[in-house]
Length: 133
Image (cartoon, rainbow, N blue to C red; front, side):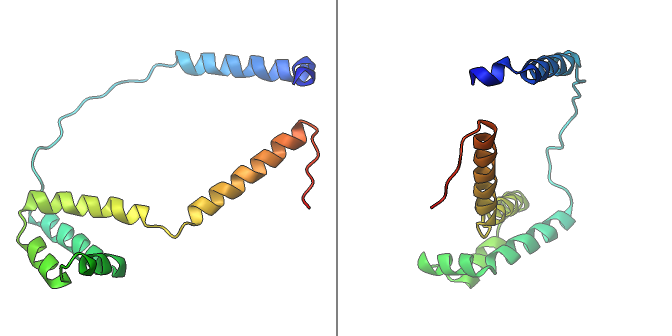
């Protein structure tokens, strides 16, 4: 690491980064405020929320979990239809979060691949040899 610090390019990059951070730190953002609507929209939002919850309840993983807990999909749908607009909207927003977390795991594999490549690049920059046997 001492060899890297003695290199001229290291000092230049460090000074450039410090200057850039100074410029970014001096720029002030504008704070904006507004009023958030307290009520849920019209009946059209209920229809949209009902469609989102219904499509979530038709997922085979969700159906299996419902059966595991002793609830039939028809009973669950009857309970959803009996909900008021506020609870239905809350449930619909939760289904969006649950669907976002139910990926196939490809993101983890891509993240691991990027991490391995980053480690290899860092090792090469430090003039270390990487031997895979």
